Image (tube, rainbow, N blue to C red; front, side):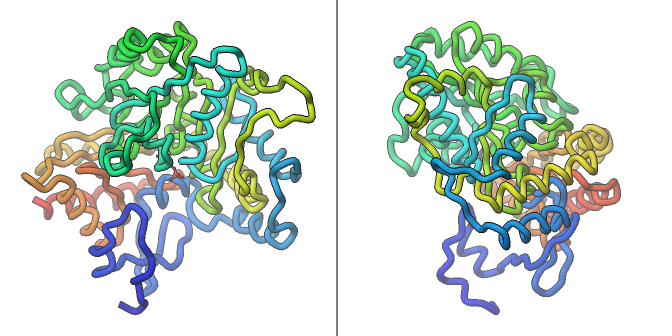
Length: 435
Ligand SMILES: Cc1ncc(COP(=O)(O)O)c(C=O)c1O
């Protein structure tokens, strides 16, 4: 070990395993990282679902450098700076019609907790203060803050942390290997699983429910593509009962599914959307909550000198983040990246589904430039087979990600066909070795 690694407690990492055999990254450009020794690593996961335009893009680099020199920080409470307003205007040009207000945060987790608070407060300001209950979905991932893990549905992220938020319930997840294994694109079966929300309405009464939050495509829980008609049905049920629908678009935002947002790919407009990651191409931490006009407007009452929503972060709309995001949106627009996944998804799907038949591959899922390859776990050792594949790919110069026993792929949207071939060939060889 060149460096003392003792002090850094790494997030979501097997710390002891890592420190015995560190995987260090020192440089990045385009589709690649490089290790400190200069070994080239193909990025199959856009860093962590965030570097959608590829690494070290000149307009983003320049925007950050110039902003740091011009104004490092500006307080966001009772003050503003021009780039925050400019960015909000740019963002609402990309959202579905009617979603034209933007609240800035610094991460996906903060966006989620902001959205949940906004939903509860919205009902209260319009006189329905009994609507405080929040509904998530089993296997959902909404970051790691207390709101997010409460509505989230991943047991490892919840079980260590006490009683979580009160008044939260969950609808069933949509993963159904028996009916949908090896579906190309959206699976055919499972729209009726949305009706589980009716069960919770019958149990709690709609008058107590503020919002339902789901990821249009669940990523961290193993890449679960929504069944055809499922999100539409969820929207209809929410409308019927006056429940807000929140799409957590932290990974589906900014071109991942072939449109700026999953909402457009699936043709369903939520009331609130949470985003982060791709908003700045991962270059500076930033998140945002995109909101329908009427939700924002409900808060705009009472004396004008009073704060309308008691919420915000010291670094909301940080100047460096706003500059990075403006550079990012320009890069996306210059290169047509927000729709590029729709052009490449056929090739990507064919490449992924060519892995069908390899040992222990029990499902392959895809949509846009998102891929999931689910492996049969080693008996009694869940997650190990996928982790072995991850380590093997790293040795072969390819970065993938695993969650449970699923390999999750989300390459930068600048990926070219030869990169897809290399990614999938490397994974195929690693899967064979992990037998
Ligand atoms: C759907 C979803 N929501 C929220 C988050 C949390 O984002 P962050 O890690 O920026 O807090 C993630 C992160 O992967 C995510 O996938």
